[in-house]
Each structure stands twice: as C-alpha cells, then as structure tokens.
Length: 293
Image: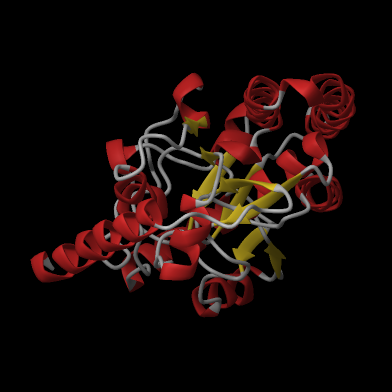
C-alpha cells in the first residue's frame, strides 16, 4: 500500500513539473473540472457551451473504485478551476492529492456549505473510506442541488465576469427546474403513508431526509450483506410491506434479486450518477408515485 502511494505521489510530482515547464497550447474553450456527471449537468445548464467540462469519474465508473490516469490528470491541470462534491472516495484518495501540487487551481467543495449526515454509507471498497464518516450523496437532494447550482453560478460569475448576465439567466432557469422537482416531491410524497424503500447502496440519504422517508440499505457497512443481514432485510421488508427495491448499475444485483423474489416485488434500476440530473429525478419521483402506498 505504501509503495502504491509513493508511486501515485511520484506520478503527480513528475507530471506537475512537466506541465509547469512546458508552455501550454491555448485551448479553444476554458476548461472546468468536476468530479461526477451530475455536476457537469449543472455547469452546462449555467454556462452553456462557453466551457469545456472535464469529468473525473467517467460514465459507468464507481467513485469508490475509480482510479486516476495521466490523461485525466493533464485535463485537471489544464483547468481554470475544479468543483468537487466533498467526500467522495475518489476525491479524497485521488483528486485532492493531485490538486495539492497545483494550488493555483481553485477548488470548490459543495459539501463545505451544507449540513451533512453521518454516514450509514461507510465504504470499504479497495481501501477507500468516506472521509469524516459522512454520506457524500448531497446532489440527490433537490434542496442541496439548488445550493450546488448557486455555488457554481457564483464561482463562474467571479471567474468569467464578462458572462455574468448570461450565467444568471441560465441559473434562474435551472433554479426553476429544481424548484419544480422539489414541489413535485412534496406533493407526491406528502400523500404517501408508507415511505420506506430498499436500496442496494444508500445513495438517497439526503433525499429521504428531505421528505421524511426511510431508506434501508442492502449493503452492510459498504460490504456485501452476510446471510444474517440478508434475512433481517427480508423480514423487515415483509413487515413494512416494502414494494420498492432500488439497484444502481455500479453494483451486483444478485442480493437485491434474492430479496425481491422473497417479498414478491421487482428490482428497479436507478442511476444516481446520471448526467441528466433532471431526468433522473423525474424518474425517481414517478417510481415513488406508482410504487408507494
């Protein structure tokens, strides 16, 4: 493990020296880096095509297990600034050490301005843990998504003041869409008596908190559930008459399928890392409207 870290640090140092010593080719567009695809959605809604958005965790990859390659690192070092969620394993393991070599690149961590929830979501994937023991999935709360959008608008307006009015108009439209999601969630979920759902990986902690829902995680402390834990989940699901079992495509579905078979329901795929944040949230609300009693 120590030799791996030394290798990573050496890679960062060598590439930093190379990039500092070479004159960079001028980019057609300013580059802004984000950690995950939903942030790309927010940046592009506000900035339009003015910026090129570099996403550190590519489509289909898991932020708990994704590694950093030299191509990603070069794009990061070409960036004007970087937006991070805050406590994703990829960020604490790879992104922040990489940026420690480039203090000239501003780092904006959305979670710094939010009230975080202690992590029932404690990973142990490939030696990654959620720093500080907090749940990082803040972008799936409509209320916190609005805060993320505000962070991005303010930062971009300060960095590119000549585009401030255009950014403001776009931000207002984004804010309206997020408000509509929040209003729809209030309307749909306030009518439901049973608001408990199962999910393989507990990515909806903040959403559940916003709307007084109960999220039950299938994975246990970031690991595959053992037979005892699996039986407890099945018993709880029957007792609470649960009809919603979410599974993310970054995780194995076999345990979720076993539970679904035992309680007589189906598993429902969701993608918390979907680049189209608005579409994913609409889909989520439709599921809750149809499946919850």
